[in-house]
Structure formats: structure tokens, C-alpha cells
Length: 103
Image (cartoon, rainbow, N blue to C red; front, side, top):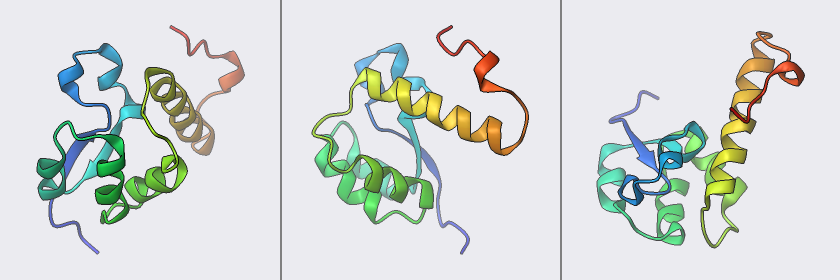
């Protein structure tokens, strides 16, 4: 199935003006229409739209984090590291035990 539209959703809104809001772990693919509806709504409202998304990664996020009441900075950092680990290890590019991900 070819996506009808595509945009980048910030789970924690960009309007927080926090540097972590732009981290990979805070981003999801989402259709333009769904993204426009969400704005800075609470996570619970966003999860409803995420679950109906045409993108598997977005649905997976809703399943994995659907029980969370809030989306906080430490969760963004953890998801960023988890996603990096998946990308690097599945592609055999790096030994993550040798990377300093705290930088």
C-alpha cells in the first residue's frame, strides 16, 4: 500500500522548544491530515490517531507506549538509543558496545 500523505509527527510538540523534541526517538511518520489534527494535544489523544495510522512504525509506537500517561525527555532518549541500536545492529554497521551514545 502506497501512503497517501506523509509528514513527521513530533510526539512531544516542537512548541516545547526543548532540544530533545527533535531527537529521532520523538519522531513518527504520520499522514498530513492526522498530523494536522494533533498539534500539541495530550499523548492519550495522539495515541488514538497513531493506532489508526497507515504506518507500521507509528502503530508499533502506540502499542509499545500506549500505557504511558506522558511522554517525557528520558523516554525520548531511551527510544532514540533503542532505534539507533536496531538500525546499527540489523545493518551490521557498528558494535554498539563501543559507541558512546551519551554524547
